[in-house]
Image (cartoon, rainbow, N blue to C red; front, side):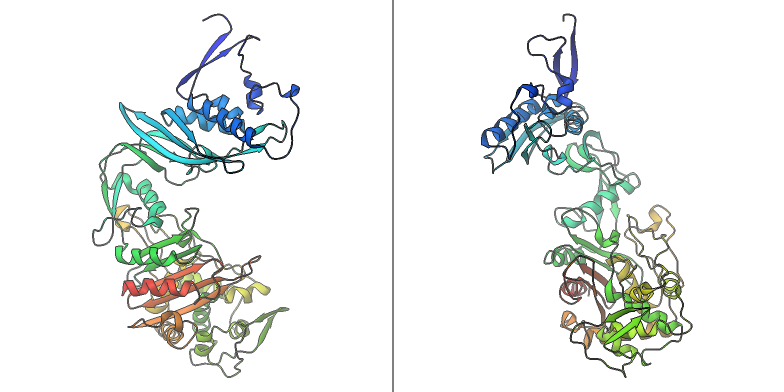
Length: 542
C-alpha cells in the first residue's frame, strides 16, 4: 500500500483509512463526534423528530456499517459514538461474531425493528446466531442529524449499560442444578430461577465436578454471573444439589405471575432449607433475597416478641387499641374502618393488626431506642450482615432509632428494611423458637459457617405461634388462608412507600413445617396480593 494508508482490524473486517484529503477519506475525529464523516458545517441544521426518509437513511447506514464490521463507522451514526464503537468492536473481536446479515422490519414511527442473522466462531467451531432487536432514530442535539439513539440493547436485546459480549471458554463449568429429590431445575421450566442458576454456576461450577463449555455470553460489569447466550461446544455439567423443592418452586412461579413486582420465599423452619424462591420482575433482580423495603405490619411479629421478652405485656395481657396514638409529635392511625378497643389484649390487637396498640406500648419500661434492634439481631439473627445462603442475600436491617422512627419501626415502617427471605425466616424463628439461618446450598459444599442467634424463649415462641394461628383463622389473614388444613398461622402487612398511591402488600405464614413470605409492590393490603401467593405456596408445600 502507498504512503499514508493505514489498516486497522475492526470487528474482524479490515477497514482502510486513507490519509490526506483523497477521495473517500474517512474522518475518525468526525465519527467520534457523531458527525459520521459528513460535512455537517455545510448542511442545513434541522430540528424536530426525524421524518420517514431520515429514519430509513440513518438506520440503513448504521446497519450497513455494522454488517461490514466497520465498528467506528457504524458508531458514527449513533448519538454516542464512543460507547457504541467499543461495544460494536467487541461484537466482532471478543464475541467473534461475523457474517452479519441484518433485515429491517417496517418502521413504527421512529422505531425500527430488525432481525440479525450471524455466525459465532471459536476454536474451529461455528454456530448460527439469530435474534431480534429494535432501534430508535432521534435528532442529534448538537448536529441536527438523524442518529440512532444509542443503547446497548440495540446490539442485543439482553444487553444493559456496561455489558459486553464475549465468546470463549466459560469462566465456570456448566452445572446441572437439582432439587432436594434430584429433579433437574432449568430456567425454561422455572423462569425466575434463571439469575439464581447463573449465580450458582458462577460460585459453585468449579466445585460440582464439570468441565468448561465454549459459549457466547454477556459479561456484566457488576458481580453478576455471565449470562450464556449460545453454546458452541458443550462442557461436561457437574451436578449441584440445592435445597429447593421442584413442586413448591413450580407453585411459587405460578403464584407470582398473578401479581406484578412480586416475590416469594418458602423454607423449612426445622432446618432453614430454602424450598422455593420466585420473582415476577422485568429486571432479573432477586428481590426475594436481596430486596430492601419496609415490611409493614409483618414486623409486628418481632415487636410482639420484644414486648413479651421484656415483660411489657403478654398474649393475653393488655394492648389497648385506640383510634390514634402519638409518639414525639407524630400521630399514627389504624387502617380505615378499624373499631377502637381500649380493652384489647395483645393477641386481639395482633390479629387485627392494630398499629396504635404497638405504638402505645413502645415507651414502656424497660424498653429503649435499641430494644427492637437487639431483639431483631440477637433473637431473630437479622441485621448483622452475616448470612451465607449460598447466593447473594440481604439480611434485613432494624437500626436503633429515636424520635418518630422508633415508633414507625415497631410497625414495619420508618427505617426498617426487609425482604421475603427475611420474613420467612422471622416466621420460622417465631414458631420454632430457634433461629436457623436460611440456605439454598449445603454449607458442607464450601465450608461456609452459617450465622447464629440465640432464638426465643419457649414461652415467647408459644405465644407468637398461637397469635399467628388466631390471625390466620379469625383475623386479617383469614380470607387468604381459608381452605388450608393442618396447623396454620399468618401475619399480614401493608407498607406505605413515599410517592406511591397504593401500599405494598406483605404476608407471611406457616403450615406444618413450611414457612413462606411474599410481597407485592403496590399490591394493597396484605391479604390482597401477597396473601394468595403465600397460601398457594403453603398449599403446595403441605
